Length: 178
Ligand code: HEC
Ligand code: HEC
Image (cartoon, rainbow, N blue to C red; front, side, top):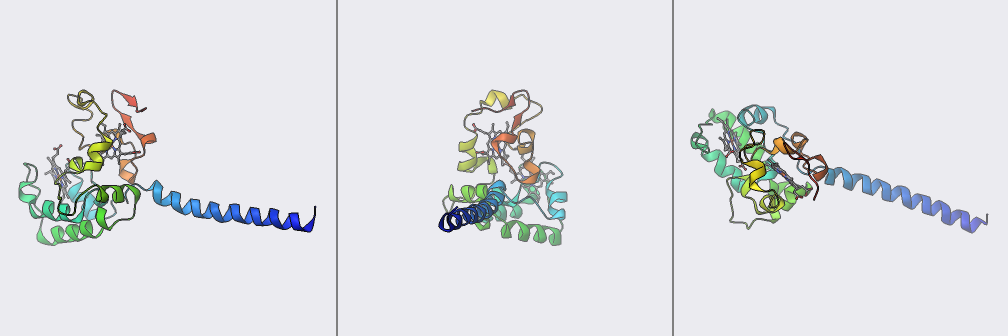
């Protein structure tokens, strides 16, 4: 092999490795739809009645509003001691969709106007859009699901922050194929 060719082969191999490294980093980020809930106090207090929604699923203004009304929280009393409430609020605000880098968090933040402060993840335009093809008959009356708010009823790896289409299993419906 001519020296010149050898160099171009080596350069090519180098390129492949460099781009693999880049893809690896991108994939890691993209693989994370939202960062998993990482504060034990949050998981304990906000994961006792329902799935501990990751902070990246709502913008900071929404979390602020939710945390300001815990004594009347969707008809339940979810009030906390002031120190716990403050710690959880700080955690939520710091990691909210509009401050996060993960793929779905960015999508969620971008789907909202700055003044929009949905009280529910299931009211965020991006989330509504993603679920528009699920007939309500699949959810209503299905005791294994109950409502769209139960993310982990269908997203088998929701707790890890992954909502990938490949990991969806709608109870009574099975794997989801578009
Ligand atoms: C005492 C039970 C209880 C506790 C504790 C609780 N919640 Fe809830 N939460 C509810 C109920 C009930 C709903 C409405 C669920 C539904 O409509 O299916 C709800 C709904 C929500 C929703 C909207 C979900 C959607 O539909 O998109 C968010 C966000 C939420 N809670 C955040 C929190 C946070 C943050 C905490 C901790 C500070 C918390 N919850 C603690 C009972 C609770
Ligand atoms: C009834 C089952 C079910 C529930 C409950 C549910 N999802 Fe989904 N979700 C789906 C299905 C099915 C799709 C794919 C829809 C499609 O592509 O047609 C999807 C798509 C998504 C996507 C986009 C995934 C992609 O690859 O494009 C995200 C993000 C998501 N869901 C988040 C959530 C969150 C957050 C919750 C809870 C607030 C939730 N889902 C509750 C069934 C569900």
